[in-house]
Length: 228
Image 1 (cartoon, rainbow, N blue to C red):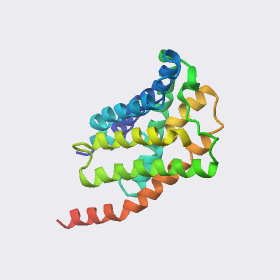
Image 2 (cartoon, rainbow, N blue to C red):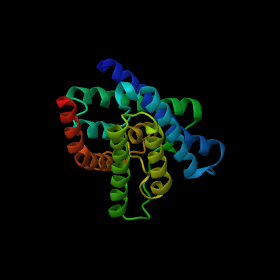
Image 3 (cartoon, rainbow, N blue to C red):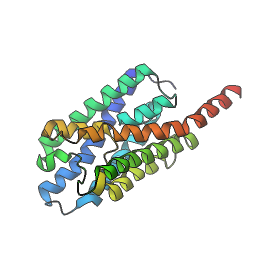
Image 4 (cartoon, one colour):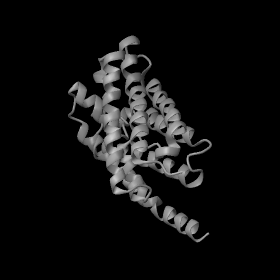
């Protein structure tokens, strides 16, 4: 079944909203109620749950991007058109901003609304590659499940799982955003924008690397399907 760009826009907006509410809301909730005692494990499991919801609810419609860097990856592999990139980007950014507004009004404003922050105890020459690596691993897992399973079965667990693991093991270095929209919304609303350059560069580098690594596989797959 083919879905319209409006349908894609709608589910991407809703899915990104859910992701940002869970991903940033968990951090704000931890700061507001638990004084940060739940820490990174709590911040890791929340987006895992959000992506389970998003992938299984909306994957058939939009491939469940919820992330501009992932959208660029899908464009490189030929899954979406230039026009669709604009629909995805608009939906993801609007959904993320609405998600941060929800967090601000319903949960609270501590922890700068859950803004991503790198750990500058480490060199930027480590921070940047770590964020690239986290994003490349996310995109690689997404492409693997799309190539092998088509977002069925345990695909949501795999995608949500790699996000959670990236946060659990890499957030203490780079912040592990992997998602420019998720990084943008709380930064704009809190005014903490000095690290946005990192999260609007490294995730795209990571997903582009993964996309070029998988592009040949998808081209071969489409050729085989056309011939059969």
